[in-house]
Image (cartoon, rainbow, N blue to C red):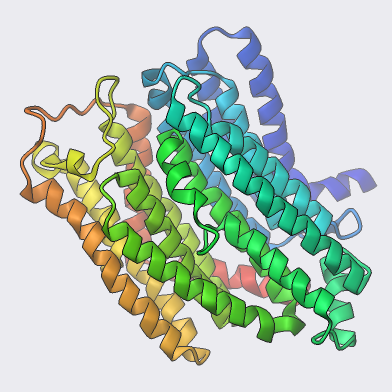
Length: 480
């Protein structure tokens, strides 16, 4: 009974672990790989209901923490996993790389993200991060016949290894300064001792902030993102732009807002610089991109800067606004990538922004779906993207960061140029091909429909989602 009690908080991770092992066995004995895809989807969809039966509290001497904060992020990871599976089915067939282990890697990467969100110890955090990272390295290079995919995997692996080294060095210095790797004990030690002038603690803070900045693709640790996003398989690009980024922000909340709360002045300055640089570089560089995946990569970088504004604001309002923003970003980004995948065939790949020319007239429903996603990414009401930015900016203003909010609004206006440029190509340009072929796909259509529905739903009725995020923040602030 004691063992079962310890395992109840880990029900989502255990459910996905079982799914991953079953997929490995099925893939080895079943010739029809579409059965593996169907099993992966059904298993992930069933596993999401395990969130309802999770018991809150620490497990394994506090190394694993289950609370509302982690549940919110796990919901994002589940949505990302399920929709990524739907996005991948036709793409893998088109690329003739329909291997069952692809879905196992998606599942194991998601497990790593979940462990990161529930980490109560720096060792647990590292284990989750490595499980996520190793899986995504392989996913980025999954198209073995494609040189761009292989190049993306190598670049991601090399830069990821460097960031891991920074994280390990930072963890070692934290242990040297506080004598513990448990986040609760680190917070207690720092509150009871004057550690502000301790150079070991400050260096550890800088190293860990740098490592996590790599995971969320914050400037100047963003160099890998455009190349990797462009070269990786398109469904993997979508998966990577959401899951690892959300996991990185989940860890930032646990480590900096809780364990390093007494060093708030130091890390606040670091995050303000990172946020301004990230918003500026992401928005400006996206303006000059012609490749749509590189444009969305720089867009993802800019959005990381907006989420950082909420964390800088702190307090339950700012943290919940950032969490809500990440949930909204999940749907609008998957929607955009789903449209790109609908245009991909064996003979033609929609890689350039100009390839979307005439889409709105040739395929009105798909054009409207892309229009909604672009308006949401821009932050135009009544789309969900407006709600996400509005609450983040309001939290920053109420916390006294008016100038930072003005900077964020300015770059949000800049972002309208590259998002609305896509709309212009869809509705005001003639198609570059005589006939714009759109190969129907039930799985992709479901992924796109779900994304668009939630973008509109959260935009029109945001209260329930915001209340969910606020309740999750209260749990982490009161119970840890």
